[in-house]
Image 1 (tube, rainbow, N blue to C red):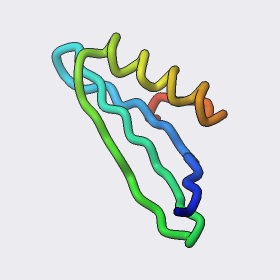
Image 2 (image 1 turned 90 degrees about the vertical axis):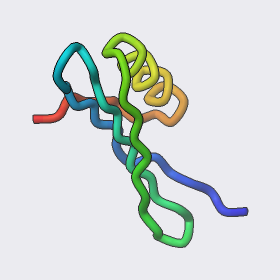
Image 3 (image 1 turned 90 degrees about the horizontal axis):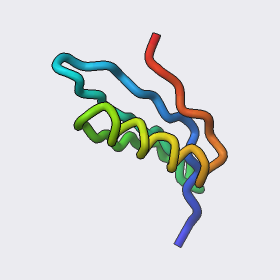
Length: 63
């Protein structure tokens, strides 16, 4: 089983106090993929902070 590197954590602000987190990752074979989750801003932001800490990537808000 290969390793996976998280290369980006982006938080998008949606309507009605919701946020979406997108986590871009790259596998050892060079394949890139995106996982996203939507939900209440406080929960999504907490997930972003946790994942950032675990993978050494600073989450950022979309521009």
